[in-house]
Image (cartoon, rainbow, N blue to C red; front, side, top):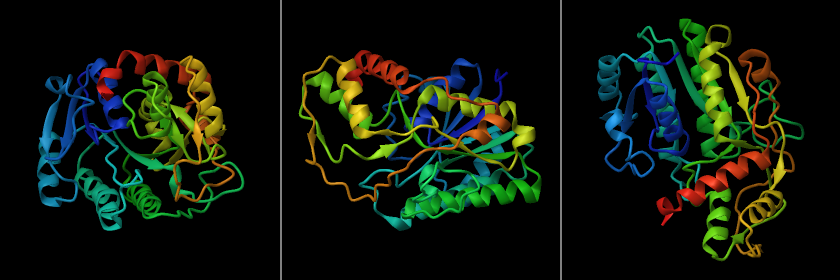
Length: 315
């Protein structure tokens, strides 16, 4: 299905982008990626020879227009992002990369006869909700990051409707799995257990809707397969269930046979933690024919096994 398709991936050095890159290399696609001078390529250095790399900044509109026209991709998978880590506090850069960068990329592709543009959104766009988050809910983001992602998604949706373009936004909840950053919750717990290091954590009661990376990749594939009926749509990509941090930590400790004891409250958390963080995935099931195949235990088991085999990447 994707053999020889020209696929442009932004954010290819990141967690989601690098997994998409590897998946579509195996599918036989022609992969094009954008990187910057400061990009850390540790996730993809072993497959760089199999892709075509371009040095471009999404905020450089003229340079972006030139390169996109030169590539003329059939599929665009936009995962480039800034501001989803605690240290990313520069609100101006968050807006520049996430909103202006997305607008520039969409505009540069608008004149092309592409088959699909997937904009990667975030559950942070919703803000605090008392019920599972639904695509029809009002967007009430609590941070510059959430604001930038919400605005980018609205622009993507409006462009799809106005210009009759196949643009879809996937609102990702809390993906985990292969190549995730060491400072994120699940990798940090796994690495502490495997290396026998202290496990410092904040609250055990914070909740998230964790979604395994293989299910995320499948959502991008299903978006392509169902692009004609889903154009302009926004879809939640989560497991449909929420789990506490304590639940996840306990299961990882069991999977690694670790004797480590979590030091709860030893880290500060400046984020507002809701009591509900759960995706309503009915729309994705109905329109994309997508359902997650991995429950938490199965996803964590595969993730732990991968980290055991690839722990050298995190040394």
